[in-house]
Image 1 (cartoon, helix red, strand yellow):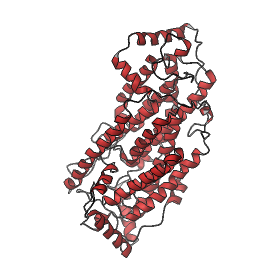
Image 2 (image 1 turned 180 degrees about the horizontal axis):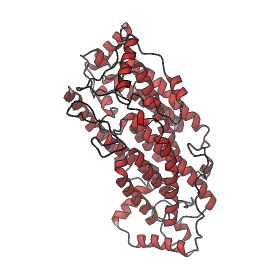
Image 3 (image 1 turned 180 degrees about the vertical axis):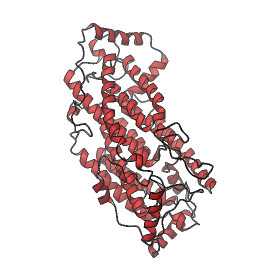
Image 4 (image 1 turned 120 degrees about the horizontal axis):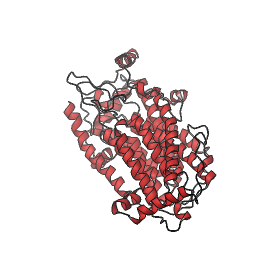
Length: 513
């Protein structure tokens, strides 16, 4: 049975890998980021976790006439006088935008670690352990809830750090090196934005620290990316060594605030225990319902059944309960029989277009997950807008906080009702992709997609209809694939939109509009 599940996943993995590569190819040769608006007032925008933009002091920079600053300029000139093609490539790559590039790197890591652990010889399954990330199996398993949480924390930390960065830029107003010394070339975009502290180094500092929480096995990789990013900033003439040092330090300090929150947000308890898993079954049976069970052999424990207890960014625990919809049809009802029959009739003779939609939105094993798919869509649409780095961070933070909270709400609903999948109710249903190892009602794809479409439609209202159409197609893909009943997706779209509106309400009051 396990082979029957894995083979279609491998097929879809190939399809989605191609899709992911196409998105990255379209951003490979971007010009240097040249914002149409530097958002000089961003230092006053509403913060997420920090209480004040000056929570961490940034020291006064030395004068541009000082020997120390002259030494910094000479370092830049040294790199520019000995420019190599490799360094030119790094400058071109990072000049497209730090938020964009770090988001791409993050998505690649999500795909790398989105691999469910294989069973032990005794039929049990290992649980990835953050305290021992290199053990078998390696940590993490970047499933959709984990990914949504990681995207949210990292995007939110980047945003708060850049808002603080803009505050200090406006305070110190130290110009970019190429504006101080005409012999320094601007090899990226020219800008009047003050260079101290460096916004690129702030981003690098945030990522260097946050990766220890989410991908502890990739710290050395991230340190290498940090070094490349910061070198590109210096060699391009965008920042001096002291701009970099101040920025990286600020980014690391602010990241620690988010790391401290992450260590106490209950995510470490989301796996639950055998007692928790058994209670879910007995509760459903006590209601007279057929409970969900794993269709894998050997049976795999349910994925993150206590994820509903994780502390979100937009919705508190009371809001998560209030978002919970009414129940799905009773498993013994005629309506459920009809929903199951409809699922069978949809899957037994799929059209080529339906199969294309299933594959495009599968976002399963080895991909950057549904939240990552929406990050890719957002980034591609943000590029032509020429946003400042701080607005890039703000717009991705709004998206990803909604994605995280959509995951929390969805998992609350799934394990509150513990509803079986169509394949469990009718063995004739053969899915076009792997069967997710968690309850059916409501659809995660539908919730993630509706939340994302709602946020992106607010940020880019001219694209709102297109985003809603994408969300509907993503929801349809789960019905076409035989993974969900129609009711799972219809209700999921509604609840996902409600979650997205929490982010929209924040956007209206954060000072950026």
